[in-house]
Image (cartoon, rainbow, N blue to C red):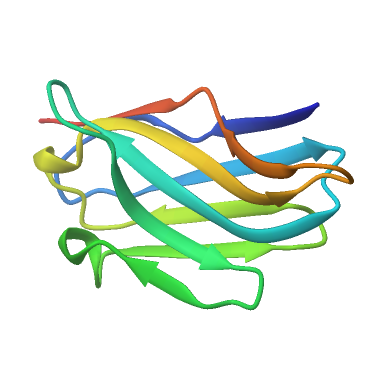
Length: 119
């Protein structure tokens, strides 16, 4: 069993910052990528940022220059530093891990952490 534990969400004023963390545990044999997605009310889940095991990153256009994803392969942990937050960043943020266990492919999701940007 693979588990993802997210933390760091909360309420912040526009222009503020938050840092999300996600730690994966369990029988992960290979880690290909870790990422963050978000889902706002009545909207589809969308990619926010993703980092490969080799360190390649990609971001949604809406967060480029404001958000930074980083990862620690050894600790199977990823972080999302969010600066200059806007009300439109309000959403539930989900951590995602892609890899494999000893016998099967892996595509795991965290339970989500709520980020609310409001004055």
